[in-house]
Each structure stands twice: as structure tokens, then as C-alpha cells.
Length: 548
Ligand SMILES: [Zn+2]
Image (cartoon, rainbow, N blue to C red; front, side):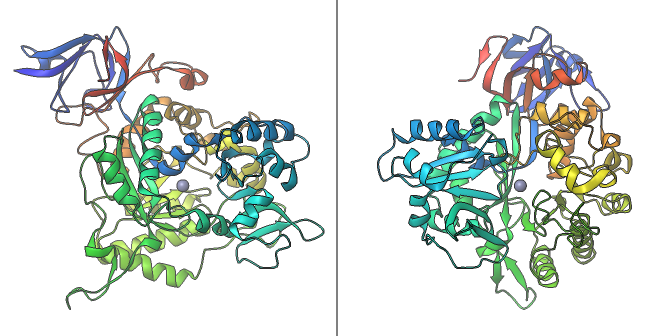
């Protein structure tokens, strides 16, 4: 037998409980051919010596926003702007190279990170050199515009319109400050959207190149083609275009936002159908690009105190958040989508939203059975003890984001208090109850490098170093399983990836050391030496073998 590639002298963590470790791996036609003694008498086109590097299945992030993230990579990065002066300097430096009529768009802007006074709209007008300015906050829940930008999108200097669930913020005199919150952000989005397919392709190219540098080989995009997180009604087509152009570096499973679905007519046997034209739905596609579940928002955010809780937020008597829209109407639509063959992914941060999600999903499963791609709950900002066995019993995948803890854990702890912080973004208790645990980041809402997220799974320390729900800590090996096999299971690919064993996709990350053996604070410092997707080196080098 003559195969494509053999990698020797590696420390291989397979993720396969029947054969957890190996030294040699053979790859043929994009798949794992065999390990160690399974390669006796087998030759290969290329044989490389890994010199003791650590190999694991490629990382799989089940909740990220790739177009949004890719755009942030192409825009002015303001993550490091720490004072008003510094912010203005970065804006004017960037703006001066742009055409006079083009927008100045900044990403990763965190107003809480600005020391002293935030520059006002007039100062931002001057810094942008008369151009319209749009700063996207890293929270994803607000924008800051300058005066030119406000005028461009049609916001009056002294606005009077009320926006349900959002705010065009004004000063004491009633003049718009430039801060635009929550639902009011649609004023800016509807001006800019839809993005062109070629812009989406460019963003996907930038995002997936970064993913490869971090060892990611599969991503589930948490909502495309509609709603405030979609970029164009043609967004899935743009993913196809990106793939054809060779710009899609990693495997992709975009969820379709509920807003993109509509009623469909059909045969009398199919009286109620709810979906995309031609009846396209979850599961269509292949190893590279596949339609994921339908993405549904059931509540808001934890830091915005809008996520639906059963108990009040700390120091906010009477406020326990709310479910979005009319829950009965929302449930009706979701059940119709399930009946039409869609897997469900319900955004639920508060425990009351988690109740709604569990009830809705279990109702759908009683009517339609369990789908091949599991039904999911996104986030789980608070998950009560009584909800954990229900998740396991119904086979619902919960996707928590542990890197929220080192990003905004102190703020979340203040909103939740100690008891509820202990129930927040659970991991250990999901495993204890036999429920699925995938790895995910919600990038670009929080940083998404998988090694950092794995470290956060292990440490659960806030940005100030305070423990946050320490009983939910898991081991580095459990976190590695989550980011590989757990994610494959939660996205319906357990038979094909997430484990390095014969027949599985040869998606491999090559690291400078063993994630399961180094001290926790070193995990995020490990180097990603190479990333292979389908047996092909797409980032870095291994034993002198590099990307083509
Ligand atoms: Zn998200």
C-alpha cells in the first residue's frame, strides 16, 4: 500500500478512547489511513519527522461569526485604544489614507477601556477629517458614530424618534451624542447592509486564514443571511463563492437566521412548511460547507441585563430581563421550522430563556424526533441544576463560551451574584450529567483562539483574576475533547471528524507541546506549528512540509 503522507516521531493525542496515543499517523485521500502498527509495510509519497511535536484533531469552534470577525480584521482595530487622545490619533492616522467620501470603520472598540473622557462627536468629526465614522463596540451591542456619520444614516442632530428595545443616546440638551444602542443599531445597519458578495468573500478569506493560524479546521457560524447578524440575503451563496474561489480556509457550517425563513407552499401532505426557497434546510452540503441549524434569538445579553432570568439581576429589583417578542408566536415559528426539517439553535442566556428553549426543543423532538444534527442551546449564561439532566435526557447540545469569563467575567459576576455565577456557562456539570460539551468562542464578541478558550475552560478566572464558578472547571484533556470530539458531536459530524482514527477526516493541529501536560497558564502560550485540513498543510510547516 502506498499512501500520501506519513508523519513520524510525533506525540499524537487521538481523542479515541480505545487508542488515546500514538507516534505515527498515515494520511491518504484526505483521511486518516492508520496509526502506528496499522502502517506496517505501508509506504508514502511523503514521510516527515515531527520531532516530538504534539498532534491532535483540528480545533472546531461551534459558535463564531466569521464574516463579522473577518471584517474586523480588515477594519481599523481599536482593541488597544486606551485613552481619548489615543483613540483620536488612531482614527486620524487611519482616515488620512482613505478617500474623502469613504466611511472610517473601526472595530473592537471598548468604551470601558477608555481612560478619562470619551471624545465627543465633534472631536470625532475632526479626527476622521470630515469623513463619516462608525465605531463598532466589542460587545456587539452598541455603535459610536460621529456627526458626519449620524447625518449620513439620517439621524437628526436633535432626534425625537423612540426605538423599541434600543436608544439613540442624547446629551442633556437633547443632541445626539453618537452612541447608538441595541435595536437602534439597525439604523446604521440598514444604511450599510446588505454587504456585497465580494466583500463577504474577502471577509471569509481573512477570517479563515486567522483560524488556520490558530489550529482551527471547522467552524459553525452562528447566524447568516438575515436578522441583525446577517450580512446579505445572499450570504450562503457568498460562502459557496468563497469556497469556489479557494478563499475558504476551513470547513464551515453556517446557521441560517430565523428571519431568513418564510412560509412555503407544498403538497397537501406538507401543509405547513417554513424554510428557504426550494425547501433547502439543515444538512445540505458536504464536508466543506453545509447548511447548519436555524438560529433563533430568544433573549438578549447578560451585560445588558436583558437576558431572561427567573430571578432579578443583582441590585436591579424588578428587572429579570425578558424573552424577545411574543414567546408563543416565536415557539410556533420554531416548531414549524423543526417540522420542515431544520435543526434548532436557540440563543438562550438567562435561565428563563433556557427553560423556553428546553421546552420548545423537547416539544419539537416529540413531534419530529431527534435530528441528525443535534438541536442546540447557544450560551447558557445561567443554567440551573434542574435543567442539566433535561439537556442530557433530550440530547440537546449546550454551547457555553468560557472565554467570556476572562473577557467580561467581573461585570457578569456583578450582575449575577455568587450563586448564579456558579451556574454560569457550565462545563463540568454538563459532563457529570452526560450532556454534550462542545468548544466555542462567539468570536468576535470575545477573543476566539482555541488554546485561550481551552485555558479558560480550565481556569475560569475573570479579567481581575477572581474565580468565576470554579466548580465548573474542567481538565485540559476534557477541554481538548470538547474542542474536537465534543464539537464534532454537537454539529452532527461525530462519525467523520474530531478523532484521529482510520477513516476520519485528516484535520490535524500540530502544537509545540502537549496541552494536557503543561501548566494551565502556559496553554494559551503554546505555538501552533502547523494546521492540516483534509491532510493538506494549510498553515505552518511540519518536518519541513509546508503549505502549497
Ligand atoms: Zn454569537
